[in-house]
Image (cartoon, rainbow, N blue to C red):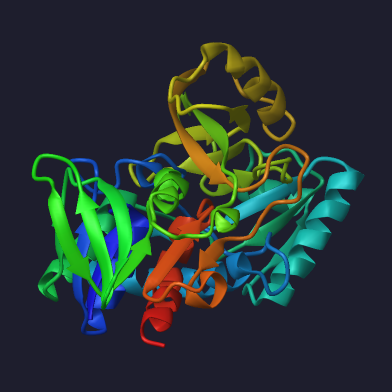
Length: 364
């Protein structure tokens, strides 16, 4: 089967790799000139454990399975990563109740090794931390996201797949035996394929609107939630990732570490109506206030605007968080077509498991 995957971000690359390993003839169409230039290059590069998501949700299932698959992949392929663990901290009794509920949800979801410890025990491990309790997640880690995507690309190409850069998909039309794809870009033209997987991230809804005959009612709304990051100008104060309790639209302004040993904070949640990646230095005031609830010693003037990413959400402020949305023939009635909508965090962690799921639909 000839399969076209739209988008060479982490989800598209993982899906294309899985399809190639399953014996399909795979082409990836990417509108940019390189892999992973969108959501995949503007996140925390965290390997999530899976304790936040509702029982039985696609997010919960894909994150927990994807976590295990991702560690195994990194170890087998030599992708830089570190299983550093994380604390979700409670600074008052209400937050303690919240982390107890998160711990229970994690156990239901099959997350391994979760444990709640008291404030003194947390400070023994992270002396700069201020909290009354912490949920310890030993299977949370960090990864070199670009190194991971390069490894996925390498596997894809080693199994006969290819990526066509600067190749935006302008139209998809059902054909006699699959799909007629119309491309723009430097070398516009047409291609006939048996199946199409839309992994276009922030552009997924736009791609779906260009599918001839696709039910418009099945295209979900897209809500953009910008996440800003601030770098820390001094030496790292923590050896683990430190998370507050979640907030509306995200997991709260947390401590992230990278494999080079640098510490940064973010992301926050800024609801926006268009793509923009500038970080407003004035947002630092809210960062200082939130961070000092768990790290009172954060020095004045130590936060520097770093970068921003955009989450392609399906729900907006005050609405319950939507699950990952995977629309195949069983949902929309069009053979050989799978659309992925709203694949935000924990998309990177879930990528190998999501790819496995999508290819199982192709092979059905």
